[in-house]
Amino acid sequence: AQSVAQPEDQVNVAEGNPLTVKCTYSVSGNPYLFWYVQYPNRGLQFLLKYITGDNLVKGSYGFEAEFNKSQTSFHLKKPSALVSDSALYFCAASVFNKFYFGSGTKLNVKP
Amino acid sequence: EPEVTQTPSHQVTQMGQEVILRCVPISNHLYFYWYRQILGQKVEFLVSFYNNEISEKSEIFDDQFSVERPDGSNFTLKIRSTKLEDSAMYFCATGGAGANVLTFGAGSRLTVL
Image (cartoon, rainbow over all chains, first blue to last red; front, side):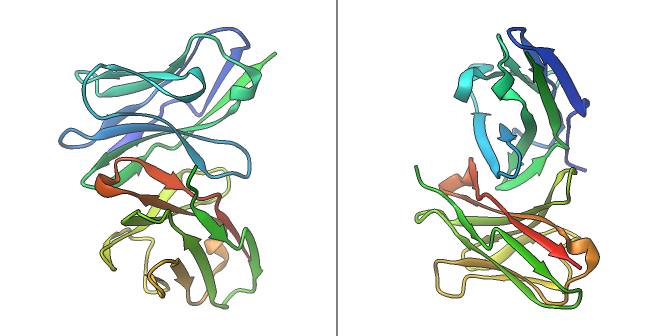
């Protein structure tokens, strides 16, 4: 079965420290990979995507993600976290216009 | 920036009533999706719609659910006879050619009493 896994329900990090939110996928073929962010009572907002090319992709708000084909991972990173980054983050993979979402990781950035 | 608009933002209904959730997609988008998110849980795929027909649906999308584009622009999700467990946030998402990025609406919160 096709799936996307986010192994951490919650990630806590201090403001100014680097952050990583993990994602692995089990999807056939060469899926497109995405990160979305959800703030309270809002829809999902697109952060970044990987389709092909450089394994490190840069997105909105200083976020970046590293694609690793051998580990089938697409971890979200940011060099220096902000309190305003606190939100729910979803990883997604798509093949043939079908999207598979992870269960979400709550990021808490403390001052 | 183009947006996906959903109405209503919140609807409260009695169990057994019919509910219609509406979505106005981005004008040149061709792929339409409905997802739901039960409070605090994962985002679940319901149905995808392309070229005026359902392209795929999940096991959640049973006979109580239907989708249509009644006027070629709005994209609606109908729940014929709501159940308590239908209480959730319902998200419409649309994609352009290739659908390699989905744009989500802000969601419609459905509360079934």
